[in-house]
Length: 185
Image 1 (cartoon, rainbow, N blue to C red):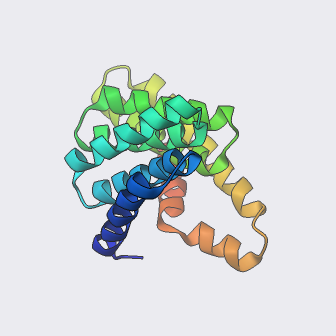
Image 2: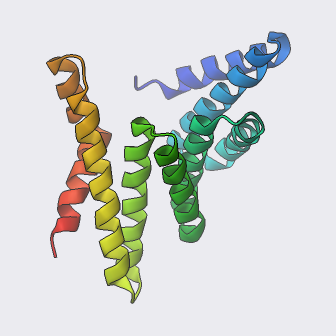
């Protein structure tokens, strides 16, 4: 909603409450959710060094509890953080893991962003490396997966206004535009 500082304060306060007062599954489940969202907000604010410890907490809990959706989300965000730090190999590995998990659990809302991010790193690496054609071809395949998944999500929207809002959303537009760029020679 454009108020990351406010969101950060609310999330941090909620995390403290969960750690102090929650019990059983409430503690681990909500702790994992909050750590993931805190990491997302911190990354969005350009504070990757603060986001990573939150993300690692989420990864540990997701692994221990078999929470595949959050494991995939954490790999997606860790991949994005690595790419922001210009660590192409780690970023690509995490994005591949996120996409593998998303496809395995058939979670379209994770498939398309993971595929889009992976297509971006593959296309960037294709421009920088001599084996550009293979990476560019793979980038196109993955970008197509992102676009097809977006179309499937839009098609299932319960009403036309929601469909249009989703398709007009900036991250969705970026994924669709990137596919068009990859189609050009």
